[in-house]
Image (cartoon, one colour):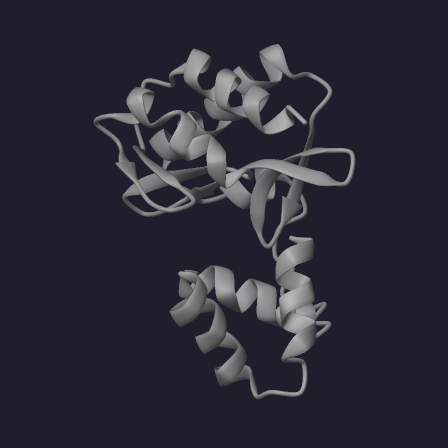
Length: 160
């Protein structure tokens, strides 16, 4: 995230729309993620909606909520020292100050995101059958959680 905040500092004098366009058009951010980075960079403190995973999952599709809990539980089995935190209104796993893994529960799917871009490329053979984007992997709301895949991807994110 330091990279993106440094980038935003170079365009701090520009209008919101220009900052959004920079992230969306030149760096492939979704509107939601671009907005989160822009608002955080602008010092917004009003965008925080969820303090805990339970808050995040309140009112969510039951199957998706169960799957998201299973995703984080699977990772915690092998990586119990990671901290579950809410950042940019999404559940994330941190190691110290570094984000390692994040997830987003959508209306029709869950996006999972290892925080090292090379991890998705390295795991490409194991991701066949999934919808893979630049920085995220889409899984169904009722996904039969692949513990080994999640644990291995997070392990790769933790490597120096």
